[in-house]
Image 1 (cartoon, one colour):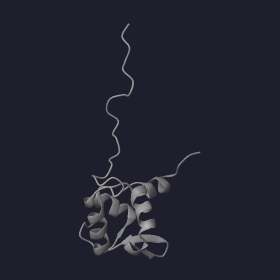
Image 2 (cartoon, one colour):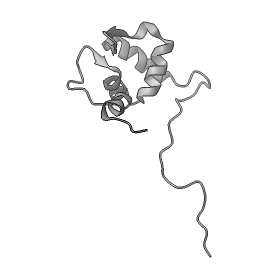
Image 3 (tube, one colour):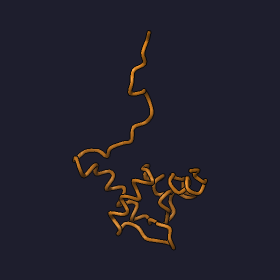
Image 4 (cartoon, one colour):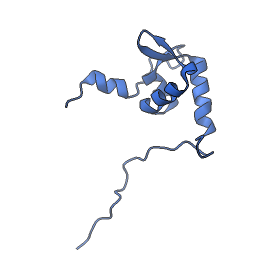
Length: 99
């Protein structure tokens, strides 16, 4: 199955035209808050009061973004610590064999 470009754009963060604009899409909000689009969508699904709709598009305003930022800054509610971060591809899990 091939993925078209509009589908990729839907799932990846994009920088906003103006970082100080009143309303932003989920993709722009994820870019500004430095989180993944999928995490933000799951978060907004559980916190419906923190977003609104423009047609079918989910948008956030400045106050919504400030509230989301405060939740992320407070840390992981499951463990009373920092939010878990996604691992980056650095070293491989298996050591290389030398013969």
